[in-house]
Amino acid sequence: MAKANKRIHQMTVKEFEALFPTEEACDAYLVRHRWPTGVRCPRCGSDRVYELTNMPFKWECPKCGEGNAYRFSHLVGTIFENTNVNLREWFRVIHMMLTSKKGVSALQVQRVMGFGSYKTAWYMRHRIRAALQENDFQKLMGIVEVDETYIGAKAKNRHKDKRDKGDHGSVGKSIVVGAVRRKGNVVARVIAQANRDTLRRFVADTISHRVSLVATDDNPAYRLGSYPHGVVNHSARQYVHGNVHTNTIEGVWSILKRGVVGTFHKVSAKYLPLYVAEFQFRYNNRKNDDIFGAAIAGC
Image (cartoon, rainbow, N blue to C red; front, side, top):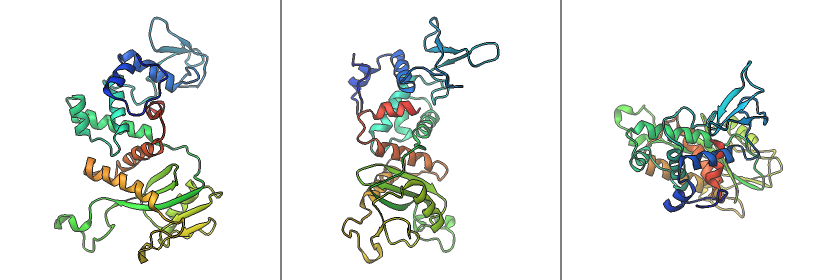
């Protein structure tokens, strides 16, 4: 059997079976990654809990509860709580999502896992995406590129009875704005409007004032007086000017769009933030040897 602390990125079937031969092995792996410094009460955060020796993977917190100690398991407060799918199957689906650059569809998950219901696969993938959302991050420094992209069908490709008069270009599409540090992490958000206030607020929220350069295209909304700002004039077919370009963030958009078009085919505006969170997590952990453990820790 593989060592318990082995770092994993892209496991083969043989490696997965060796690391997770039983449901109990998955239970132990979750406990180690959820509480790396020791089990804590999910209610109050106390580390003064005691394990129930006759009930595996269950603890009691004497600090919580009125008269009776609060009893909890390792699944409480995780995406795995109150589901009929065992941890081993959850782990398989998570690994499928993390090791596929363009994502996996619910139909593919259903076929590979043998789930009787498409809804089960769909539900699991969305819960996993919600767990992968990175709300806590350090503001980006160094050279940062900022750009927005539009996700959705082109107006000209819609059926006539679904078009509004004057529909063109980005009308009806969802908007995603992103900032990426070169050779570093990306922060991406779905926004309602790509106007000046929204884009400037996104920059202020995600980029440190100690940044050495913010590179954007010639969108007039990006007039960043308080940041060192470089512009490439895409309207004049200028794509690189010295070290000023937006090629990195456009590469991120390329991966996202290939996933949306090639794997998922259609993504609703309602769930788009979850898909963006999945691609952001995968991109930010592309060099992380323990991407699987990082995902489990967030679940």
